[in-house]
Length: 629
Ligand code: SF4
Image 1: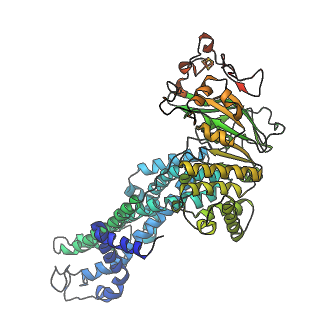
Image 2: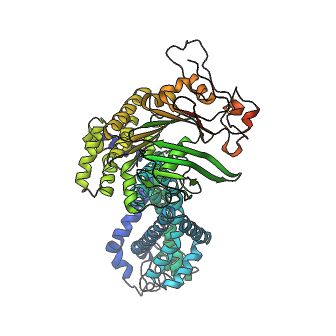
Image 3: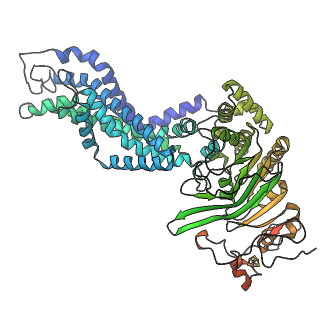
């Protein structure tokens, strides 16, 4: 828990940092002058003295006097408020406009996103000052027009920054999880995306304010900004340069003020960047996905298979790459009965995670998903869903991702993330939703649930974060839990606890479970049936109890690679030679052939998945392994 000791350490760390000290001093000087300048030096700045017109620098007037005998130093100090105020206002306009356009561009559909990205690109390509001059002509001469012109000219830069940052945030698991829960785009933007962009945007905004100060001085210098009798540093610079040969210090005063203020903003920006950079969060990206509304396209029968909660036929995922179209998932069939637990097993790159993402509509452009059937709980998940269906999907399909840290929004308290599901879908009041969140945390055996619900994800352990993810699925009425490598990032003890929580959750809710894993022991400890995937296809489908008697050479090799309590300690563990094929260069015929000891010439034709003659499994192999017992 951060305490006063932590705060004291932060203060002393800050004071040891030269950049922080410079930012603090310059910032205090500039802001103090802007606030107090007109109060302290206002009268001196306005007093005409016809006995000392256009005087050079002297002890009484360090920067001389102007044409009416007014003290230039006093006028420079008074002009600080207007100069800085206008620069900050222009920056604020640029930021708000840019963030708005960039956020819309990052969250909108493919066509609008491309159009906005193109427009932003064109606007960014123009030099900022040229753009400001263009807008100044439109908005008219004067401080208001200049502020608007500068704000509009700065907006494309912020839009590009927001778009880029948002792209990295929207690919995080917690945004996918929010999508899976059916949270609306606007809410995802406001609650999950924008809070995570705040820090870099503020850093860039601070630096941009320094540039705006210079640009505003330029506009005033050109006569497009502040108009007499008002004055800012740009206007004073313009007047000072008119008398550069008689009184050079008249231009030096405002020029120095611009430089010092610009430096103050830049110091502050650099210090903020250093601070933010020091505690930058690292997030894992999930595999590429396709947009939620870019659903599969085939229009064959969508009837729900009787007695199933999930029914998938001929699921195929296509991804265009520089080397052509690849198909990392090819013709997957899958039926899940209510309450059934099915494991999907395979090495990395076998297509198992992408299958789960395609089923839950969490893939993104440019990935394409096709299926002859993709029904969940009576809903056809191909194509666009209505609001009611999205709500049903959000409350009845629960996703648990591999990395619980990246699955949760780092800026939201655990309990608030859970409560969001209830307020979004069940119309609960915030108070009721929070109470339900705590109750659900208790249901997944979270110790001190009330206190944990008020903590941020980084304050929880890996196992606790995974419990939060599971509890999030429990906020609705889950009919299916899809868990993608839910225990991979956890140590062995916590792994077991999380598996027990998933199992008890399944038993309590009667939900079906689709468990993605590369670990046979995880799958066999919790599942009834297992699908083994290789090179994007299901190559064997069998009850977990029959794993030891698997028919496919690949499944056999996976089973034999797992050590048991009987495995002699000095015996070398078996492994599968070679590597899984690259989806961009699949071999002709059976893709396992280059690694298979049973391969022969018949294997140059890819075998279909066929039911065993006896037993309750199916295998895709020309020479399946015979039963050994
Ligand atoms: S089809 Fe041939 S290459 Fe493929 S797994 Fe069976 S035996 Fe091996």
